[in-house]
Length: 263
Image (cartoon, rainbow, N blue to C red):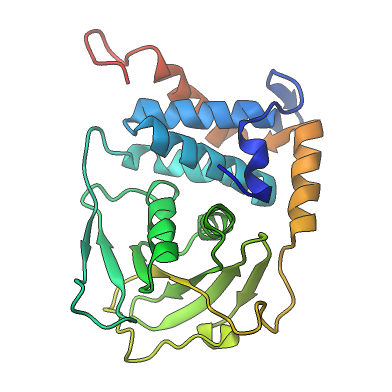
């Protein structure tokens, strides 16, 4: 995975062991990524999906201290075997009509979000990711914008189909937040009808000025500082979610029961 904020995902962090510190655990960045990768593979995902998810977990833990918690809440939604995601909205639709993802397995945003963001970055039409708005939306944007070099906008879609808060991530990992898409000069009109349902609308941002007229919520310098500290000192994680992820990771090489296939 390329891009500024994700460089720590696969490199060695501070120390090699998990240390108990206060009410939580101080864990090396490398160990968080390895545990996340193994847990997702053991849950049934491919190694490629697991690697992308593990990078997001590290990014979320470094920026918001919530990556491990997010993964712990999604592990039981990882499908075993191939369960493809379908899209509705063919080529006959207008340029601004969204591509709507349908996932029978109900994957969480850590698994489904990266592919949705890549799809939005690659084409002119927005992509509707099902599910409620969570902190992981911002991590998905930061990662995908850095990976693709495309500024990406995420708009919360409320249950009644109306737009809510927005986050924009530029290719250099600068993050902007706003209460609605109008702050970014983005339309949400009849050109892009959204059916009533919770979701996140992902789209390319083609701002004429290159940057919005808003103060940044996060900057590349902020990301660098957070990662530098994490790589030097490790990260303190909540013991409950860490136990869930670490326990799932232990099944990476050992089947859950005799005779069950190994990942």
